[in-house]
Length: 298
Image 1 (cartoon, rainbow, N blue to C red):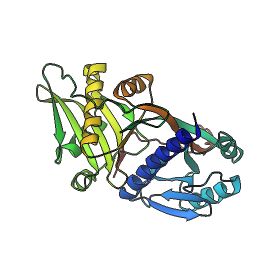
Image 2: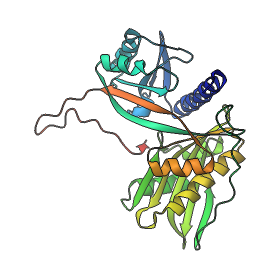
Image 3: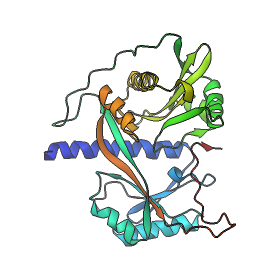
Image 4: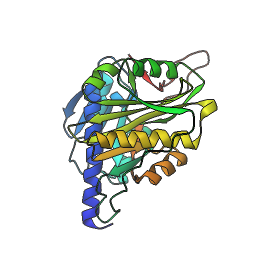
């Protein structure tokens, strides 16, 4: 990859980072700059994606003592020590800096990026997605009312549904209508014989012209590659119709990545999260258990 392609890749990853910062702020998180790091924290919601330390924007390197200052502030706020960053914006050695602070890797989520017009020296402009072939008996609906909120509540509490993809942005059930009115969210529903078999959510940030395929869920007995493709394709088309020039999605499984690549997404870095080591709880105690909710509710 030549220098121009590297610069463009970093610019796109910064755009992803800016999208996430804006989304977190919209969800009530606060951003506090301490030296060379930003401390993201939510005053009431402890969900990991709203409470972490990250290198300040446009920093090429951050030493361990600066990260520690941010972690100390996070601890003062009653949150677990957690650091998060996008691989591709910092050299591989940065991971060692976090390990030297006693942090261990919590998760690594590959990022898939669709760029209108393509990426210089990397890929040509992707072919705009065509309307997906809908299986017989299935109907696609864009949800613009309270039903989107109600459906995600239903899916979250119903073991018959499987959340296939969960992004690096928390799915908060409770502020849906405000987000829809502000043009920050799209919910897509799949019906079969009037019964919901699938749902997807896309978060939008008009300020950065970006969209994020946050989550998809399918009824377990109806799950198929065909329905997953319908959800991904419809989500991508909906974001493009809202003038997004960059759309990203988490590639948590090979199936996710294959579907995204077929639509014109490319693999580009990962979201890396490190967390303080949690000692195993003593017998008969819940201490030390780190709870990771699938959907963040408030």
